[in-house]
Image 1: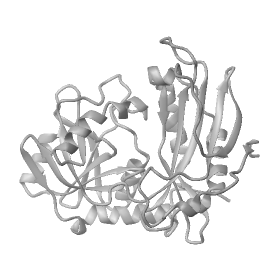
Image 2: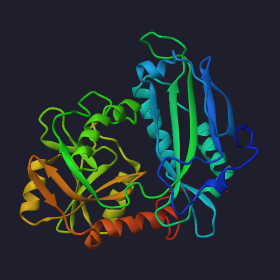
Image 3: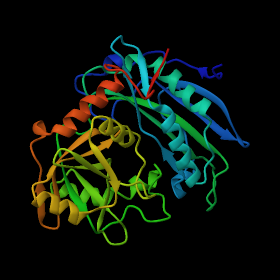
Image 4: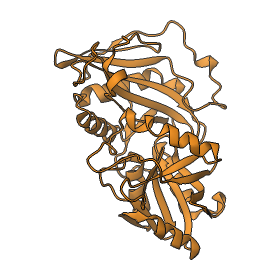
Length: 354
């Protein structure tokens, strides 16, 4: 039986203000949001309320000590117009893995799924149906103690809000290999969707964009010899349109839900997917030998982000034209069709909201 969630509907929807044909990613928000607070050792008073600002103390512990984690998800509509989620249980498991690493309490499955389900059903008219579009969902948790002291917070808030989005990267991206700054290291929080992981990436990404690049490729923190992930995606490299390489899950990179979905679909499609440590030399050799036929990033926001070029210390590896990419084009359509129920979901990934 569904948990009891107090619902306070907005007096006036803002949906008419949204131009669904021209959506800037992450700037337009749907009418409602979900909130539940952790106090006295338990989650209590779940509610859905009109989207709006929240009041916080300047001494809020998460602002000072970084106890904050989040997830990225999407809601779609099937061909009949019914709303659905994609692999929500995997996001539920991952946010709790992140929370555990940051010393935060676990959100219950019931609150996570019911909060998402009831919120998306209430705001389902905000789900765009244009190809490449979706309703982006942002579950997040942060420490709420009104206390300046270095210790885990006692109180927390978990929230979800939604925003209609088009493609995160509307065109293939140019990436630069990062060898000055470090994103993650053994024993750290690289695998977690912790807010600090993204905060520390802002400066190197900003510097790369000033040089004309769209994103950076993080390398290992010890030797800067092995590829890890980009600022927004997991990474894949294709050899001869047959073998697909992707960095292995080693505690330093995010265990992407989209990454896992792509690996399964590629293997079912007959591709040889190899998860391993990938050196920059291996990528350079593959390019110089004419074997590097495709490269792309995967993530909830980006879905499949084709890489136009890879810059590494004076060498610029320019890949084939995006429209000629056999693997990433096939994978994009396959994954999109599953998410929107245009083809049969054989993995039970789609979560229908009925």
